[in-house]
Amino acid sequence: MKLVFATNNTHKLEEVRAMLSDSIEIVSLKEIGCSEDIPETAETMEGNALLKVRYIKEHYGYDCFADDSGLEVEVLNNTPGVYSARYSGIPHDAEANMNKLLQEMEGKANRKGRFRSVIALLLNGEEYLFDGIVNGQITKEKRGENGFGYDPVFIPDDYTQTFAELGDHIKNQISHRARAVAKLTAFLSTNSI
Ligand code: IMP
Picture 1 (cartoon, rainbow, N blue to C red):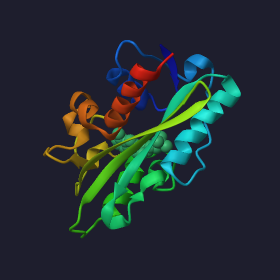
Picture 2 (cartoon, rainbow, N blue to C red):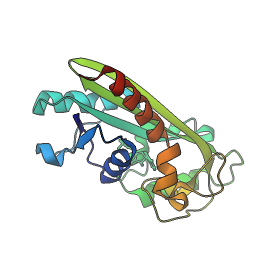
Picture 3 (tube, rainbow, N blue to C red):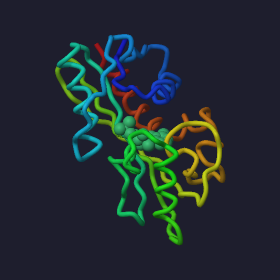
Picture 4 (spheres, helix red, strand yellow):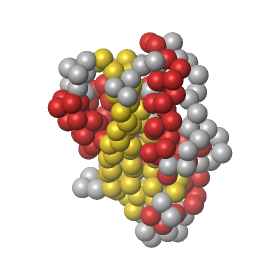
Protein backbone atom coordinates (compact mmCIF):
# COMPACT_ATOMS: atom_id res chain seq x y z
CA MET A 1 0.00 0.00 0.00
CA LYS A 2 0.98 3.64 -0.50
CA LEU A 3 0.79 6.09 2.40
CA VAL A 4 1.76 9.75 2.70
CA PHE A 5 4.22 10.54 5.51
CA ALA A 6 3.46 14.10 6.59
CA THR A 7 6.94 15.41 7.36
CA ASN A 8 9.29 17.99 5.86
CA ASN A 9 12.20 16.47 7.78
CA THR A 10 14.22 14.49 5.21
CA HIS A 11 16.11 12.65 7.98
CA LYS A 12 12.83 11.35 9.41
CA LEU A 13 11.64 10.42 5.93
CA GLU A 14 14.77 8.37 5.24
CA GLU A 15 14.72 6.76 8.69
CA VAL A 16 11.12 5.63 8.36
CA ARG A 17 11.59 4.48 4.74
CA ALA A 18 14.44 2.26 5.96
CA MET A 19 12.25 0.83 8.74
CA LEU A 20 9.12 -0.06 6.79
CA SER A 21 8.63 -3.32 4.97
CA ASP A 22 8.44 -3.33 1.16
CA SER A 23 4.68 -3.72 1.34
CA ILE A 24 4.29 -0.09 2.49
CA GLU A 25 5.48 2.59 0.07
CA ILE A 26 5.96 6.03 1.59
CA VAL A 27 4.91 9.08 -0.40
CA SER A 28 6.58 12.34 0.66
CA LEU A 29 4.93 15.75 1.03
CA LYS A 30 7.04 16.96 -1.90
CA GLU A 31 5.50 14.24 -4.07
CA ILE A 32 1.96 15.44 -3.28
CA GLY A 33 2.95 19.07 -3.93
CA CYS A 34 2.93 20.22 -0.29
CA SER A 35 5.85 22.51 0.53
CA GLU A 36 4.37 24.68 3.27
CA ASP A 37 5.11 24.33 6.98
CA ILE A 38 2.25 22.45 8.61
CA PRO A 39 1.12 24.21 11.81
CA GLU A 40 2.39 22.54 15.01
CA THR A 41 0.60 24.64 17.61
CA ALA A 42 -0.63 21.98 20.02
CA GLU A 43 0.83 21.61 23.51
CA THR A 44 1.41 17.86 23.28
CA MET A 45 3.12 15.56 20.79
CA GLU A 46 -0.17 13.69 20.35
CA GLY A 47 -1.91 16.97 19.50
CA ASN A 48 0.74 18.03 16.99
CA ALA A 49 0.83 14.64 15.26
CA LEU A 50 -2.96 14.82 14.86
CA LEU A 51 -2.80 18.42 13.57
CA LYS A 52 -0.41 17.31 10.83
CA VAL A 53 -2.52 14.39 9.54
CA ARG A 54 -5.75 16.42 9.67
CA TYR A 55 -4.06 19.25 7.73
CA ILE A 56 -2.97 16.92 4.93
CA LYS A 57 -6.37 15.24 4.72
CA GLU A 58 -8.17 18.60 4.67
CA HIS A 59 -5.90 20.36 2.15
CA TYR A 60 -4.72 17.49 -0.05
CA GLY A 61 -7.26 14.73 0.49
CA TYR A 62 -4.81 11.96 1.38
CA ASP A 63 -4.87 9.44 4.19
CA CYS A 64 -1.51 9.73 5.89
CA PHE A 65 0.59 9.38 9.01
CA ALA A 66 2.77 11.90 10.86
CA ASP A 67 5.28 11.77 13.67
CA ASP A 68 5.81 14.32 16.39
CA SER A 69 8.77 13.69 18.59
CA GLY A 70 11.11 15.22 21.10
CA LEU A 71 13.59 14.84 23.91
CA GLU A 72 12.37 14.74 27.52
CA VAL A 73 15.01 15.34 30.20
CA GLU A 74 14.12 14.26 33.73
CA VAL A 75 16.02 16.94 35.67
CA LEU A 76 14.53 19.64 33.40
CA ASN A 77 10.93 18.58 34.21
CA ASN A 78 10.74 16.59 30.97
CA THR A 79 11.51 19.58 28.76
CA PRO A 80 12.23 20.47 25.95
CA GLY A 81 9.63 17.80 24.97
CA VAL A 82 7.13 19.15 22.47
CA TYR A 83 9.31 22.28 22.07
CA SER A 84 12.46 20.32 21.13
CA ALA A 85 12.73 21.73 17.60
CA ARG A 86 12.68 25.36 18.83
CA TYR A 87 14.27 25.01 22.29
CA SER A 88 16.90 27.70 21.65
CA GLY A 89 14.34 30.05 20.16
CA ILE A 90 15.68 29.48 16.65
CA PRO A 91 13.47 26.86 14.94
CA HIS A 92 15.28 23.74 13.70
CA ASP A 93 18.78 24.98 14.69
CA ALA A 94 20.19 21.73 16.09
CA GLU A 95 23.52 23.25 17.16
CA ALA A 96 21.84 26.06 19.09
CA ASN A 97 19.35 23.62 20.66
CA MET A 98 22.11 21.27 21.84
CA ASN A 99 24.20 24.16 23.17
CA LYS A 100 21.25 25.38 25.21
CA LEU A 101 20.60 21.87 26.54
CA LEU A 102 24.24 21.33 27.57
CA GLN A 103 24.24 24.72 29.26
CA GLU A 104 21.01 23.97 31.19
CA MET A 105 22.52 20.63 32.29
CA GLU A 106 25.84 22.04 33.48
CA GLY A 107 26.66 20.64 36.92
CA LYS A 108 23.62 18.33 36.96
CA ALA A 109 24.39 14.78 38.12
CA ASN A 110 21.10 13.29 36.87
CA ARG A 111 21.62 12.97 33.09
CA LYS A 112 18.54 10.79 32.40
CA GLY A 113 16.59 11.59 29.23
CA ARG A 114 14.33 9.91 26.76
CA PHE A 115 13.29 10.42 23.18
CA ARG A 116 9.57 10.00 22.61
CA SER A 117 7.77 9.70 19.29
CA VAL A 118 4.04 9.78 18.70
CA ILE A 119 2.72 8.69 15.32
CA ALA A 120 -0.78 9.68 14.25
CA LEU A 121 -2.44 7.73 11.45
CA LEU A 122 -5.52 8.92 9.60
CA LEU A 123 -6.96 6.02 7.64
CA ASN A 124 -10.44 5.63 6.19
CA GLY A 125 -11.84 8.42 8.36
CA GLU A 126 -10.43 7.02 11.63
CA GLU A 127 -7.55 8.39 13.72
CA TYR A 128 -5.03 6.18 15.55
CA LEU A 129 -2.01 6.95 17.78
CA PHE A 130 1.16 4.86 18.30
CA ASP A 131 4.06 5.80 20.56
CA GLY A 132 7.66 4.79 21.12
CA ILE A 133 10.26 5.63 23.76
CA VAL A 134 14.00 5.12 24.06
CA ASN A 135 15.62 5.85 27.42
CA GLY A 136 19.18 7.07 27.80
CA GLN A 137 21.62 9.63 29.15
CA ILE A 138 22.54 13.17 28.08
CA THR A 139 26.27 13.58 27.44
CA LYS A 140 28.39 16.52 28.62
CA GLU A 141 29.61 17.29 25.11
CA LYS A 142 28.51 16.61 21.50
CA ARG A 143 29.87 13.44 19.91
CA GLY A 144 29.40 12.02 16.41
CA GLU A 145 28.37 13.16 12.97
CA ASN A 146 25.35 11.02 11.98
CA GLY A 147 21.65 11.60 12.42
CA PHE A 148 20.02 14.91 13.26
CA GLY A 149 18.69 17.06 16.10
CA TYR A 150 19.93 15.97 19.53
CA ASP A 151 21.58 12.73 18.32
CA PRO A 152 25.14 13.89 19.26
CA VAL A 153 24.18 14.40 22.94
CA PHE A 154 22.09 11.26 23.55
CA ILE A 155 23.45 7.84 24.58
CA PRO A 156 20.74 5.15 24.54
CA ASP A 157 20.66 2.75 27.52
CA ASP A 158 22.89 -0.34 27.06
CA TYR A 159 25.25 1.56 24.70
CA THR A 160 28.32 3.74 25.27
CA GLN A 161 28.11 5.80 22.08
CA THR A 162 25.70 8.57 21.11
CA PHE A 163 23.06 8.07 18.41
CA ALA A 164 25.26 10.26 16.18
CA GLU A 165 28.19 7.87 16.70
CA LEU A 166 26.14 4.65 16.46
CA GLY A 167 24.79 5.59 13.03
CA ASP A 168 21.51 4.95 11.25
CA HIS A 169 21.66 1.16 11.17
CA ILE A 170 21.65 0.77 14.96
CA LYS A 171 19.56 3.86 15.63
CA ASN A 172 16.83 2.58 13.30
CA GLN A 173 16.55 -0.64 15.31
CA ILE A 174 16.23 0.87 18.78
CA SER A 175 14.99 4.45 18.45
CA HIS A 176 11.75 5.92 19.72
CA ARG A 177 10.62 6.30 16.10
CA ALA A 178 11.54 2.68 15.28
CA ARG A 179 9.39 1.52 18.20
CA ALA A 180 6.42 3.66 17.16
CA VAL A 181 6.82 2.60 13.51
CA ALA A 182 6.84 -1.07 14.57
CA LYS A 183 3.43 -0.54 16.19
CA LEU A 184 2.18 1.29 13.09
CA THR A 185 3.40 -1.53 10.83
CA ALA A 186 1.82 -4.21 12.99
CA PHE A 187 -1.46 -2.31 12.90
CA LEU A 188 -1.35 -1.81 9.12
CA SER A 189 -0.52 -5.43 8.45
CA THR A 190 -3.67 -6.57 10.21
CA ASN A 191 -6.01 -3.66 9.47
CA SER A 192 -5.16 -2.28 6.03
CA ILE A 193 -7.62 -2.25 3.20
P1 IMP B 1 9.11 17.60 15.22
O1 IMP B 1 9.66 17.61 13.84
O2 IMP B 1 8.17 18.69 15.52
O3 IMP B 1 8.62 16.25 15.62
O4 IMP B 1 10.33 17.98 16.17
C1 IMP B 1 11.15 17.02 16.56
C2 IMP B 1 12.39 17.64 17.17
O5 IMP B 1 12.77 16.79 18.24
C3 IMP B 1 13.53 17.62 16.18
O6 IMP B 1 13.69 18.85 15.52
C4 IMP B 1 14.70 17.29 17.05
O7 IMP B 1 15.17 18.47 17.65
C5 IMP B 1 14.11 16.41 18.12
N1 IMP B 1 14.16 14.99 17.71
C6 IMP B 1 13.11 14.18 17.41
N2 IMP B 1 13.52 12.96 17.06
C7 IMP B 1 14.86 13.00 17.13
C8 IMP B 1 15.87 12.03 16.84
O8 IMP B 1 15.63 10.89 16.43
N3 IMP B 1 17.13 12.43 17.04
C9 IMP B 1 17.45 13.67 17.49
N4 IMP B 1 16.57 14.62 17.73
C10 IMP B 1 15.26 14.29 17.56
